[in-house]
Length: 323
Image (cartoon, rainbow, N blue to C red; front, side, top):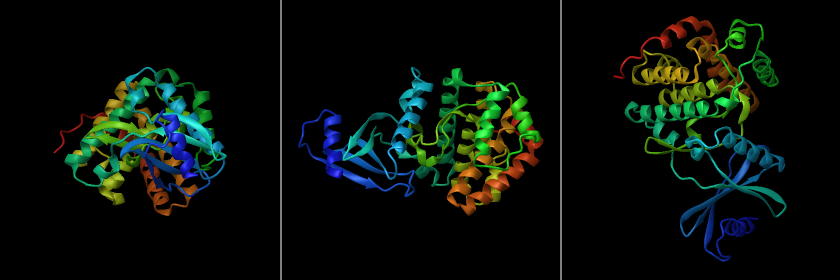
């Protein structure tokens, strides 16, 4: 199949047949929902990426539609150019293959792995700002009505039976006029962001994208996943999220305040969406049997609910200067 993919890549990009192309295979997830990816080069230069579904071709159709929806939500804005971009979907040897633009850049995960705030904080802040830009650009698709928010929560209930629609934080989220659902990446983590220095080059992996998700939960996901790589230990991670958590904690506060100001979401509404992130993460961890992640997100869920008022107060105050 690889030779057929290479030939199709040349046709797709308008290059003559027989041009020298080579591919590096990336096995990806081994689940039925996963893909085998071929990173294709032409004379040593990136040409395109071809993704072959491990399971049904419907997986290709789903990812293609997710990428298209993500782009349409911010069409015509500068943020559109930073998205993973589809070139085409084509049947190759009986399989529906997704061809994507080959964007280069250094994964944010590599930078954060340095564990030095001087390098981590600028990248962390850049991606958090990118997501805020995305949420603001997709404002016409935001839904504020209680019925839409309830439907989004009920959709989550399919994979997480622990959400109580009558709990205090759920009622607060549903009733707050500044909380909303809208276009959501679903997996905004350091491995899915490519950087050029401290600038976001492209954001990839929109397999979990939805038009009626929880944008604030994506920002929380970015904060928690970055803190996990930066600090590792659970106790250090939670402490680092608060304004007195050093340079990283100060950056977190600034990003949250900026997000809330630009999306007209109150700090209270933002804090009331923190458990949404935990429940979403718990459902994913349970589906993949990830015990460590399950413990982490259960701990965070408890803290987010129990310390609701303290978090509102902490993030509402002026952010301290990073030390």
